[in-house]
Image (tube, rainbow, N blue to C red; front, top):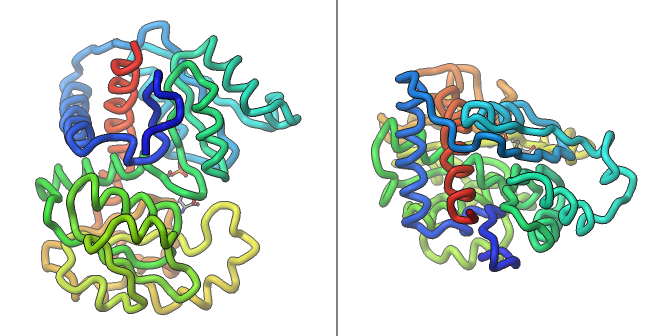
Length: 308
Ligand code: CP
Ligand code: NVA
């Protein structure tokens, strides 16, 4: 899906990047990581500003975007609806027009995907989706960079998604097409991902209810929290429905011996993942978290370059 404002490139969903752009962006992320570790100074965004609107909590997304701008020589603004006029009902369209006349990029973490789309439609500068109920495309860039660094190209590999058919699952469905891999999803009944998105992915993605079937021969195993932000009231019901979906050693043993485990974090040990798996040798969750920084630097550079 291309964003509605054709004069400006945005990143509202993973499919806003073509497969070749996405691969180039990962290669650039790896290079930016190398440059940072080598102590090379690179300040392409001097005097540029990123506005970050957070309507939900965040640790990784906030710190990685803010640090990315600082390392690039720019500046990031943390904006909470509690302290801005957005929280007092100023229309999204007006906020987008005002902010985008002052800053160079805007990142939004909110509930409804329609909010980021409306914001982008009225923004003169690139808008980045920092998570909605619908998807979490920035996390996918980090995950794909992490797989690339540990195992090489993910093309043709088998990926297993265990648990909720949520925003992360939706971004994995899109990633299967963008990065050309097989995705096997196992969800409890009633917690499946969006049917239209799944249908659009075709044979590449399969949906079932048995985690053991989904992880069979997998190269990468993923899960996420059972109750996402905004679903706190459903916590108890979800704990019961998802109990057979924990990624533990027995489940990992069905995947390939060299399979990796990833989780976007924050994680709940003893719920969606056992401590032995997330803290074990197949887990790459700390590299995955770190790569939020490097992959988002590549994304920022790409969007600023695409919208000079
Ligand atoms: N994975 C992720 O987006 O983490 P935060 O909620 O801490 O930003
Ligand atoms: N699915 C989780 C992801 C958090 C990064 C949520 O939306 O809360």
